[in-house]
Every structure is written in C-alpha cells, then in structure tokens.
Amino acid sequence: MRSPYDGDVDAWVWWLIAAAVLGLAEIVSVSLVFAMLAGGALAAAVVDILGGGLPLQFAAFIVVSVALLGALRPIARKHLYQPPETRTGVAALIGAKALVLERVDAHNGLVKINGEVWSARAYDGESVLEPGQTVDVVQIEGSYALVL
Image (cartoon, rainbow, N blue to C red; front, top):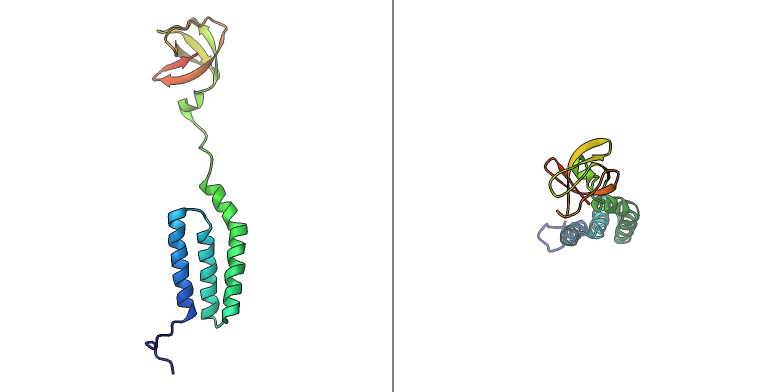
C-alpha cells in the first residue's frame, strides 16, 4: 500500500499546478491564450482522477486546449475588446450637423440640431455664421452648442 508521504505525487496534482501557473500567466498577460491552456490542464487532471493514463491525459489537454482556443477565445476577445459605447445625451450631439437659424458669433446665436433649437456660440470666438449655413457641433458647453 502506498503512503501519502512516499514522495510520489499523482499526476492530477501536477496538472492542477500547471493550470494555476497558466492562470497566473493569463492574469499578467491578458492574452486569452494561457486561460485556454489552463482549461486543458484542468481537463487532463479530471482524466487522471478518473483513472486515465498519461497518453489520455495529454490527449485531453491538447483536445480541450485547441477547442477552447478555437471556439471560446474568439468570443472572449470580442467581449474584451469592444468598441466604445454609443454616445448618448448631449455627447451624441458632438459632430452633428446644425442649421444656423439666427446669426451666431462669439456671444450668441441660434441653431437647429436634430430638430431641436439650441443657443449657440462660435467655437473659435471669432467666426460669424449667418442664417441658413450648415455648421458642425464641436462641443456642448452648458446650454450652448459651440459650432464651427
């Protein structure tokens, strides 16, 4: 009978250690590769616990790692590297086109942005924009649209 102190460590322990090391490497790198390899190592540990031999453990490691890299990694990358969220509120007005309704200068004026009338000022503080001109909303400052 084998003693727990005879120096032999079951393979599943080594697979768990490998999974932990790979998990730590993933935390440091955020490459989404090491996590998938850690999943393969966990699968190999399960195979050992269920009584599978070393070739079956390596096969489980390879098959699960490749499957995770091929199927799960692209989905995880898509969610990790999403483009910036769509702007809402007044931030959504920046970059919009506006129609000058009343003369816009450094101090005041009126523009129509997406069907709403806004108080406006010239963004550069020097331009004078006449009614009927189409301008760009550069910034929203309080209740004023700064246009150019």
